[in-house]
Length: 429
Image 1 (cartoon, one colour):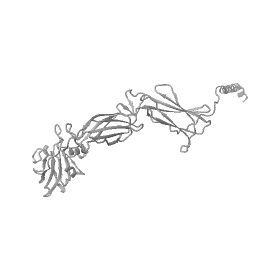
Image 2 (cartoon, one colour):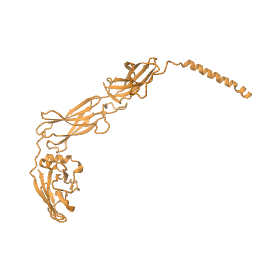
Image 3 (spheres, rainbow, N blue to C red):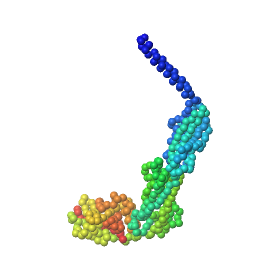
Image 4 (cartoon, rainbow, N blue to C red):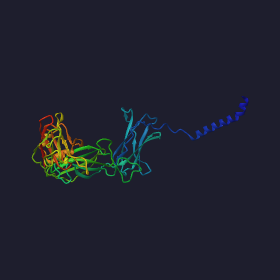
């Protein structure tokens, strides 16, 4: 042991000297300056949105815990891109305001967004300064967005009438609109300079004015109908129905896009339309289809362009409506027009009215039955009608043309297990 101590004593003394030296250096270069920093709770509501418009108020909330030294003031600084410097924009003397809900002193800084370029990033520093000179800073970042939306009418299409046909009451005119042209809903340093950062769109309101009457709201829709709202460029279709009783008067539609915060609107007015009177149908024609034997015979099919029956050996292309089945005490009506060829032919299709059929038949015009057919879901436009009964009202579009008929079943006379006669009252041009 003596040998060990003798051998390593110089090393131990040297180490002790180094420790003493380090202690002296620490004492020389590090001295305590004042008490602790201000205490700002981490659960402060200090997360603003990602974009604000010029003039909009950004609420920034601070929650304070008990302090080792009283808070003297709160400084609000801003740095606006591309400037490298921050400037003080507000000095708030500290005043305690205890919140029972949050169990802490609370301060809400109401920062007003200054004029700045679109898409510019703003950093807001809220600096809490104690009387001991120490401070603590919370920072928020967001970009400057355009508050007022834009709206443009691209085109108008009558979806319930031919392109060259007149507009009448009840027609549906589809307006194609673009909102916030060149708009984006978020921006980064790589966003193109031509893009415009917009506040989120809230809704689109359609107004209509007929003649000298006051403008009224026709419909309101959320933007988008479902999903997260956005300020990006949006193209959409709006279906506007020409009001009843508007024939001969100017009908004007106006579209208004809305932003909720801050409240801003933009509107665009479509060219006026002057609806024509509807086209009347000829008086009802009473037609009878007769199914005989096992194949139907020569009186089971009807040509809706000539309103005459088509014999069994006649061309299938003219068999617009035919009895094709009478089994189980039920009657089936079906279009027998071919569906294959070059070009592919379009068969006659039917829409059976499940509600309001009698009234629709009584007041039918070419325009009303065309409108009803074209606005019906595609799944309801069929070539086969099963279980036909007396009172059924059916609209037919003949062979895909702008030619329509409406008929009601006025009688079903069964003379045997297979033979049946079906009487129709058909209205068409």
